Length: 437
Image 1 (tube, rainbow, N blue to C red):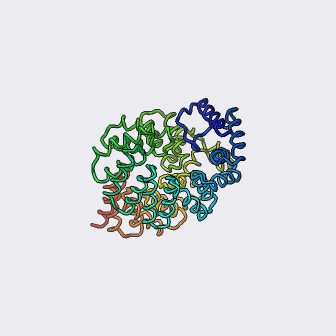
Image 2: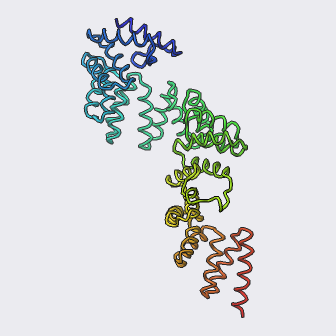
Image 3: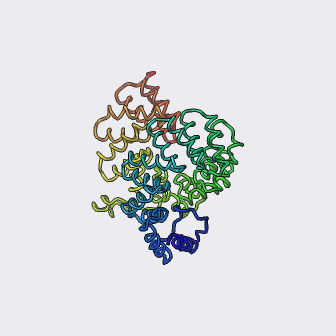
């Protein structure tokens, strides 16, 4: 019954194009296929008669289907009969359910029976607890069991402890065995010590093996050399696999090329993946498309309805993006929501945005709080904001503090832009005449 189930299992996998070797419990058959359904029936018959590997495979099928309680029961049956892979799988089920202590018991049993995956899981558990020596012992056990993840995890452990030479040694061992993330980690380590020529082939090897992070990192390497077209191809490879920052870079490149539709598509992917910069840039693209609305068309209802671009600005702003915070503040001010505008301007200003500080000053001045406004204008002017310097010059001139007014006028002339330079120049000359009179 078990052998018949395995044959049907393999046939179902081949029917879906999964022509890899027989990986035991790791084989994923397409749910709902006739062969898969029949295979499950024969696994059940064999498992019910005490066949431990049938119970293991049945547990894996049920786990993939989300029937975790029954999957756990079959894993337990198989593990009690001495199947190490079932004990390991049961450990992961228990960990995901929050029972780490019970998971460790089953991982220990599996690791002692030579299961490398369980040994790695135990190593990670001890590493999380700060028990690095025990973690290292289990990672070595995983490596001895033929699991390349053991060498990779040893590399990570050494890197965290600052043992760079040993980290490189373990990364190399795993990378030469074909571990793609170890190849990427090795390349990063080499890059950190200035060995760019040594890093590049490992990034390439990892990217070719399917490492999304390596493809992105390779793109950064090429971009740093000015090879933008090659870098873009790497970014596109990573973006196609769902890499958020790579999608952002592709979006930016497409914007530069004027391909707004492609740019929007990639920016949406990156923004959806959590990139604040992508959300801001997507909002700016949508914002630029909005038709101008004349004042007589703006009813109260239209002012209170947020557009999609506003929603993206807010998403970026809530993630701490300073330019988005300033933009959300401006939109709130345009709706007449002074409190909301001040909140976003203040958030941007406190994070170091000179535009946020300037706009907050304008808002406070309009509300009659010119002394506080001057504080924020000074912060903006010190950060290089010409209009803020001009505002300060006017404030001091009105107060009769002509020398201070002239100082800020000089600063505004130097900072610009052109219209500010012109106005500040006239004010400075007037103050100078008055001071010399």
